[in-house]
Length: 69
Ligand code: SF4
Image (cartoon, rainbow, N blue to C red):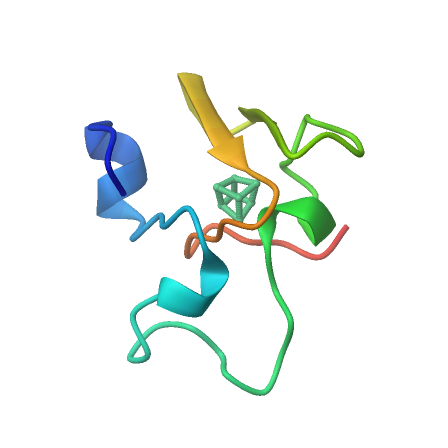
């Protein structure tokens, strides 16, 4: 992550799910922001996240707050 947002960093957010910390990312899944219930970007490549006020996330991103849409 190139942008600083402490709440997102606390939940291990990365712009690309493939860069996620292997110790916390469930490798047998295909989780990313685009298929997370908290993603507010619709079909856009970038958008808001319900967990992070004032911080846009990438559709390709991921954090430990992921919940199935
Ligand atoms: S909660 Fe969901 S939409 Fe928000 S950053 Fe984490 S994975 Fe992406």
